[in-house]
Length: 479
Image (cartoon, rainbow, N blue to C red; front, side, top):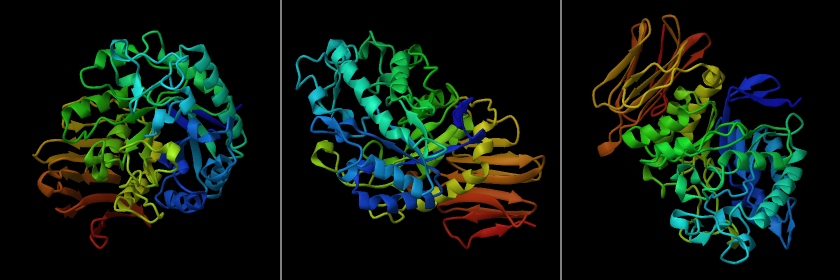
């Protein structure tokens, strides 16, 4: 029996539940000499797992698969560095990984534009489905399907020796946002004769690894809710989702789409954008991904992944997509030189809270929020979730303590009867350069902030303490 399993969407390591708390690191965009420093910084940020794509086009060299070098093709060396850093690993070998890579990480030789014998995947109106302007091959083509099986078997062989508990590998991801990111598309916009579930299951099985496999399904595109639901859910691999919906604090449409993805089934958030500002500038401010990530956990998500945790170079020419400029993930919490970036401190506060409460959050039974309401009690049991999108203050009380958020804000609270055990609060209203005030009052002591609001309440030596990371000296010790 495997030492790592999934139960009700929760990763179990040697029989113990675990919050999947990951940072994504595109190792193939860095020189191997950069790996130890970046991995050490990921651990210092409080993340426990490193996730990473394994791009097919990068590891196919001169007609053979290479996983032990040269340079950043040394997947074996990278996994050794992950183990040395004391991190777990989640590998994502595709076959199509997107990740701002040409052909989504597929080798050029498998593009129908280059090999006319290959059948293209069908897009809108029967036109070829394209990635960065290049036609993608269809899995309905037996020749391409055979190549996929060969790639995944080779990648699985390279990963096999690193399986938990003897190595860091605790899970894999099959596909990426479906097969070609089609989970957000209308039903007639991608290979209508392909079914999502069987193909993802086939990818997972082809790896031949005795570790859990997750899918990461996209939220629906605007106005495509029925098509999104009609695609169904894979039973194998396990459910996971990715969030590229937008800013759920200020955009009701983004909120609707995100809540659908986060509440559709139990599983981890496998990709929360922290650093790719060209997709949405607001994601470069940690307020947005923290807000989104906590919202997902309050909805019942069993994990959270920072994408990307590290800024990197673009890499070798075969990894370059026109228009995607270096560094990749420019606003990531960890900079290109492995030093903390502007978002690092905010991430550290979040992971500090999740180190104490993550397992309880992952395993709690949630009622699930409903879009459009301001006050959500999303948990049966000790957890409460305050989600305020109104300019008017909102407060949540559970005994002799009060938390109030003005403007846009989020709070995840844990209480025992009338006693507040821990809290994470974030004010995120940045319209006009403002931050939303956050106020916590416990046992007559009060802390109010009007500036950047990153608040965490922790117990230290048996006494609760509120820390405001905008000013480390600004803290209150409760009697």
